[in-house]
Length: 158
Image 1 (cartoon, one colour):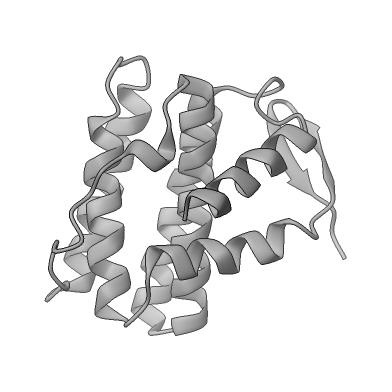
Image 2: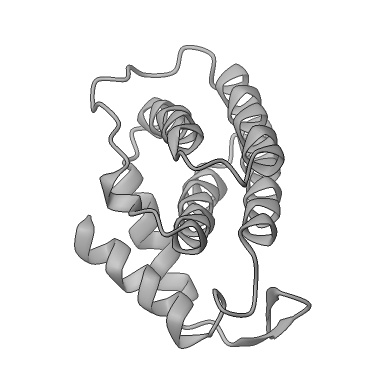
């Protein structure tokens, strides 16, 4: 997982996203991805669920880069359980992201840990792993081209 995180961090660096954006803009992108996850859960679309979980992690890595936190040091216990009510967990995940946006100036990464716990529970519900979802997202973004516009990376349309 550490090597994969380093690759995502390098992706951010190569596209100059961190120096041309803010932690809040990354958190707002995270919020968009959480809504995509909720919609994928409603639609029971496993591919989209996997994609959204991976994309959420990518944006959280961006937040960590801004805050100078080490994403790989955010510890979550593997035994967080499997979600019994996956949509409720997705709502709780959204609440965590709201707090992330509101408290982006906090000095602690604790809110990210709770976010990862919900993500992990949701991924386990669908027999996915956080690492597998992140790898899938990385395989997509590494090929992505685009440009920075008002502090956000806008992907080229194809």
